[in-house]
Image (cartoon, helix red, strand yellow):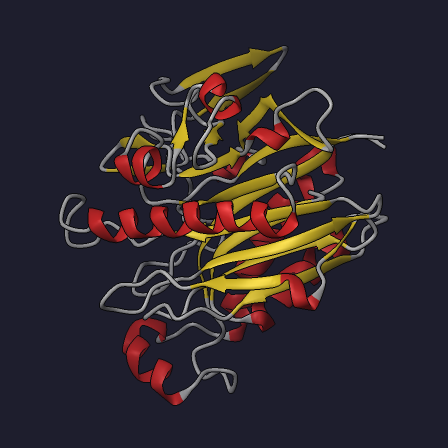
Length: 341
């Protein structure tokens, strides 16, 4: 068996239709006019656009495990998984979804190939990030591989920078502390050698203190391997930080390499990240990360803007103009993970 292809994507406001019977009256009031004109046809078009990207991952075989955020409910997740299933062969994708407490009703979820993993119902946990207003919980799923290995995976969508990066930093610090606590707790429950993968949109970059001081992540592999007190995480996105946008040529084709996963005011930010604990670093690890495989997904080419800065092409909605040929305001990220025989 080849390596697992793992991906993460903030799919930007994948909401159910404007008058969805699956939305509570309270949430309908909160969203107000933001969903005006969001028809079932637009929802399904956005799902189709997202599914096209996901299905082309991994050499058009689709990912083995995909984490997503900014989805409204399990219904749209099931629609997305079904659309991907329709575009690839030999897959049996299933969904595990967390109905979180976010004020805007956006959730974290996973799509996984049930031929490769199970997600036992009693091994799914939503960890509350305490703050004055509702926010997304950290979603932990203890996947089981067909070989019987437990793989603890945390899906994250940390509080936004709305109101200012510094003004909102304390909320993300709290999220980092919450993640660090449950990372340690997972090792206590499942054993010190348990592999842990953290993925998400952190709304901070790898060098921000929410990740380095509170989540206990670092760019130094040695620090992770030799931690003697609380367990640390190795942030696999550091090689991308500080890069410049570039275009690479291969024959007649050109590939754009963005410098980040999200663009704000024409500045690239690496907000979407993979982090692993020391149990995914050893050559003899049950599940071993391949750091050199980490990349930002920019295929198909229509995902990438054609302006001076290679920002993602947005689908829009939620008060923004709709581009039916768009996708999301974030790029996906992906990597390989090898399982021991």
